[in-house]
Image (cartoon, rainbow, N blue to C red; front, side, top):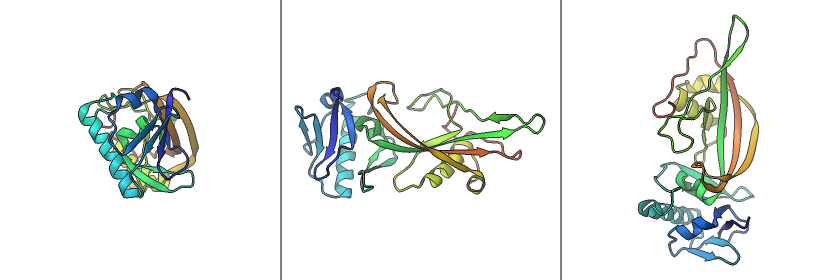
Length: 224
C-alpha cells in the first residue's frame, strides 16, 4: 500500500478508497482538500452533509477535467454513483469519471444470456463486442449485459434497465425471466485504462435464457 494514499472524509472514520500517490501529485486540489504526505492521508474537508460533499467532489472532478491534469479524467461521465460507509450510510454521489481515480467501491450488475438449440440441446451464449468508442476496454468481448448501479438504484432495476439499453429486451420480459445467481467482489491495482490505480468491484450476477422469440438487438453506442 506504499504506492497509495488513503481517501478520507473529515468527521468519518474509515477510508473510502485509495488514490495512487503519483496521482495525488498530479491533480489540482481545491482548498477543501487536506493532504498529509507523511501519513498518506487525502481528506475532504469543509463538508458536513451529503449535499456539500457531493458538490465539492463534483467541483474537484470538473476542475481537473477542464485543465486535463490526469489521463483518468478526460471527460465527464454524466452518471452519478454512490459512496457508502461500512455501515451503509450514503455519504455522497460522484460522477463516474472519478470512481477509479479515488479507488472507491463500484457496484455493478452483469448478466449472461443464452439460447438453447431445440435440434441438439446445445446452449449458445450471446457474447457481444464492446463499441470502440467506450472509455473502458473498447472493442473487447464482454458479458451479455453489464453496467454500474446509479445512485439510489437497486440491482434488479439496474439489470432491467441495462437489458433494455444494451440489447433492447423489454423490461417486463427481463423481470419475468431473469435469475439472480450470486455476487462477486474483487480488487485490481489498475484503472479501466490499464494504468496503475485501484479498483474495488462488487458485482451482482444474473443469468437469463432467451426464448426463441427473443432476438437481442444492440443498443445505440453500446456494442460494436
